[in-house]
Length: 435
Image (cartoon, rainbow, N blue to C red; front, side, top):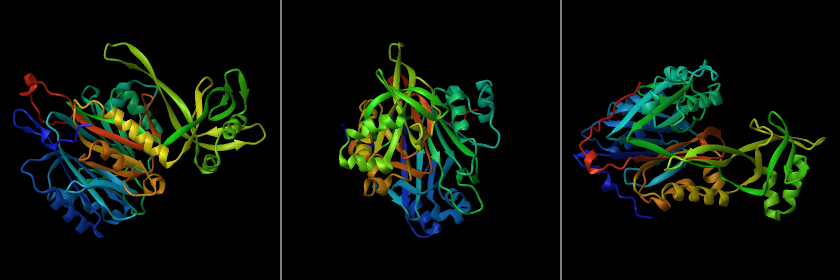
């Protein structure tokens, strides 16, 4: 793969794309802000979007953070959240995942040709999912025509999170969505950053124009055993599965799978067993023909009934769906993430300018046994890629064409600009709000 080329970030007509980053682990917020601002420098022009991620170590000082940053650096839109850890890139280009330490990550993006809008959403009362999509669009206040990608950050005190995600999919079906639930803290304010405010509920940032975030969702598991079809189910409780002509209880099916595992894999089953639920969606290829794509959505197993061999899963399922048992382990997580990132970056016609990483608190050193596990995978393919993000209490990203709330997952958003032909070089490249 061709190396990342920062000097290709110049469009004809004198319009410049830039991504400036800063990362600090200073003990106090004041010191961290000074450190980050020094790394960012002071450009002559205002950035289009600032992404700010801070660890909960600075939670008591959080209301001071945005005013301090905005007094020294300029951006049209500011969004961010608290994390159980912070992902960021220093001014010298080195990137890190900082866990269990105070940390501050700031990214300033200048995106000529982008349409950017940010909105605060209250989750206390949502529009009706059975109503018209226009109700959701009016409630959010963003036009679907200009929303190609969305960053969704949610406060951990919010209710109706799954309904919110489903509603945004309903209202903006063409927009890829990535984000996460912020980390909780004990201070008497929210966990979300928006312009000069600390808020609860949710924050959405819409990106459109000639920019998009390509999503990559690495769930960190590998399949074991055959694919089973659900024969009988009550809501989220699996009663009977089938494999060909053979029907049995879920526990009997699992026992068949365990018989083919080695000793190390059986040990993993005790604490790292999950169920994949197949999700399918129709997609259009370059010729406009429809094809069905499917993927397994990984969900926790939450209960067993020894009397009838039933298994409860943390997802509503229906008869006829396919399921498969999965194991979560470091090697599988690395292989899966690297393979998905390779596939996403195989097309080099549009440069990846920035990587947004929203990772589970259960990843990091706890999964990989070393620091920077997810970042190092991305940088094998794009050595100089600026990255930023947070360790979340739940990650948001699409699987099988539908956006879901995940656990144990790394959700990547790869920021790309559409290829520009010479005839388009004089086009307007300003950034404006939608809605």
